[in-house]
Length: 366
Image (cartoon, rainbow, N blue to C red; front, top):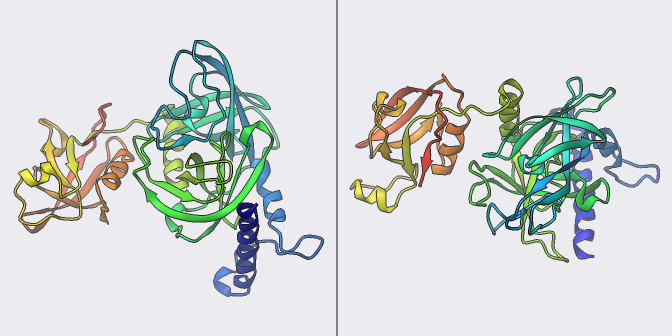
C-alpha cells in the first residue's frame, strides 16, 4: 500500500512540475495534459496518446532442460518476461511486451529474450521475426497491419537522475499496466545480464511480462525498453532496468538493414586501473580511464599503433568513463568506420585512427 501511495504521489508531483514549467518559453513544446474531468491532475490524457503503441507479444516454441529461464544469464537480475520453468523439453507459451516504433512498416521493438526459441510470434496478428541482438537484448519484429500507432522517440542522452518516468507493459498476462517513478541511476554496467550494458535504472515497477515494454518520459516519448528487475518481493517492486533508446535505435537500424548486428573488431584488450594486469605494466600513476593490456597481432589496433600501457581517454572526441563504457561504445561502431581514439602514452596525449574490420570476434574485456 505504501508503494502504491508513493507512486501516486510521484505521478501527481511530476504532473504539477510539468504544469508549472509549461508557462516558460523554454518548455513551450511540452504538452502534458493537466486535468481529467474531475479537475484533478492526471496522466491519463498522456497515456491515452501512447498506450496503444505498447502491445503484448506472445510466443510459442519448444525448450529443453535448462535452468530457470528468467535467471539463466545471472542470478543477480531477473528477466521481465513471463515464462515458465520447465524441467524437460516441451511446448511452451510465453509472453512479454513490445513497442511500435514504425507504424507504416509495422515494426515493433522488444527484447531478444522475449522471442528467444519462438516458433511463432503473435501480436494480436501473427508477427515475423526481423532479427535480434542477444548482446544488448534488443529485437525487432514486424506485423502486417493498418492504422497502427507508433511511439514518439525521445533522446536518452539527455536524461538525468530524478526525471519522472512511466513504465508501460503487460505483466503476468493480466493486461496493459502502467507504473510510475523516477530515473534512479544512469549508465548501470554491473547488472551482469548482458554482454553490453548501459542501463537506465528506475524505481517504476517492472514485473515479469514487462520485457520489451516502454519506459516513457512526461512528453510521452519512448526513452527506453524495459528488460530486467532486481530484488522484487511481494511488497517491493525492486529495481527496474531499461535499455536506453539511443542504443536501441542503433541496434534496431542494424537489424532492419541486415537482420543482425555486424560488430567489427578493434583487437584490443583493456581493463580499468588499478588492476593486476595494469600493475604489471608498471604505470607511474593509475589513471581513471581504461588501460590497454593487450593488442592482437595483425589487428586494426596494432595497425593504428596501439600498445599495452596506453590509456584510452577519449573515443570519437568524447571522454571514456571506464572499461564498460569503452566496451559498449566500440560494440556500437559500424564495420568499416574509421574511429579516432585519444590515448595517453607516458603522460603525452596522442590521437590515433583505426579502421573497424568486419569480423565476428568481439573485443575482449577481462
